Image (tube, rainbow, N blue to C red; front, side, top):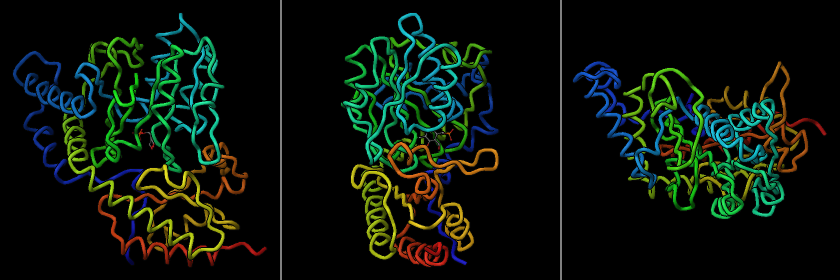
Length: 381
Ligand code: PLP
């Protein structure tokens, strides 16, 4: 059976060029970057180079780059670390209603810690418009978090307007750029953001490593205490091979961004066009144009998302659902609900995401498999 992986938004394979770059740092250059001897110096020099490289790609200064264990930690740190550092100024935080759970759960924790949190609503496409953000803000808002691109439906947020609204009202602006990194040419000054998170395994780098960008002058409390690593803000020995790999993966992504983007856009448009044309009852979720190049998300009327995912998996196609399984019951996707979909529709969302090595033939084949699964699973009316 032919296997077709269409879940690149969940994770990407390690690029062999990245693996090669990482290899010496597992055993040859194995020193602890905090050690004062030459082994340590060799390791710290690799970390410094990686930090410089990532900073220069993002238009940042090296001292503004902090290494973390991935997107979840970066998001947690941005939300909780910044809010706590600003608690004397104000205790109100705004996050988008369709943020990743790494942001939403961190914001819920803040509520337990005495902060108040408002959700910025979205329109039917999942866009947080400028006026919706302004409506959620208050005089004591100290932090706004809206993601660059949504992980379920791919909708791109109007960051320049959102960041301007937040910052002109005296709040910091944080963006979770985990899904956009490696596909869109991110730059922390265009539009200007105060905090930004990245996760290496979304752009063909290793898993378990990420970045939090913190603009110089922005105070942030540390969450992980221990050693004095990361300028005293994040304890723990750095994962040197992973950091080296992440920098190389980001470098390659920027180098190849134009071709990767064009390829993904053409695959996405081919997939969406064929599905809408060939599968009755297919409903596209997310913005029709302003969406990630590699993302397509559909609800198929009368078909349960969970069953469709199982049927696709049995047929060799990997896709993903937005609905989360909590304590044995399938919760509807909070993203689709925020966009005004019904509960049934929000349980049915299926995400297909494409990668740099996905082919047009795979897209065509996947549409045919999807079509036959949908026909088979369609509930009798
Ligand atoms: N933020 C977004 C938008 C994501 O898509 C993900 C992962 O799916 C994360 C955060 C969490 O990243 P990580 O898997 O590195 O913890």
